[in-house]
Length: 77
Length: 77
Image 1: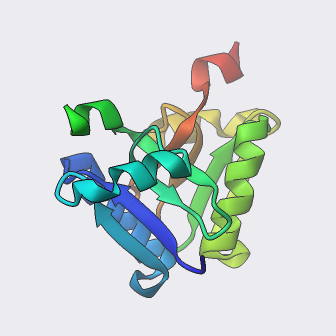
Image 2: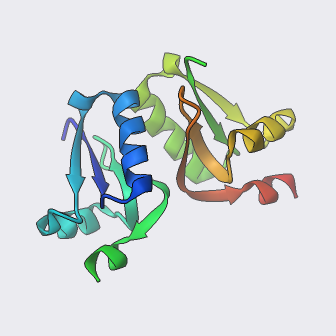
């Protein structure tokens, strides 16, 4: 994995964090996934170790949870 | 402000987050401040809106709280 993946759920704090992350890392270095819309990727996010969104999975596979937005349980429910 | 500022308190989760942030953004784009050691900068961190560390203040002045590490109250106490 060479890109980071930014998972979010379309909440206001997510959108704000997304803009900042893209500014910091560069749009070409990060894939943005809205698991509120693309629910097929919720499982992948859980497997990566994501507990809440917004979160960034780095190229090393580490998860950086950013703020505390919506829990995955909320997005699913 | 042209650099981001990464505030931490030396805790394991902080050190891990610091390495990831430096990998992602580049060491020359981020100032690292250990408010556990450099306590004179706790007030500055609070003014920036930081509630917990590790946290990144972006060049736009927005705060990205990363994980939930130590509350500022714990660092002070």
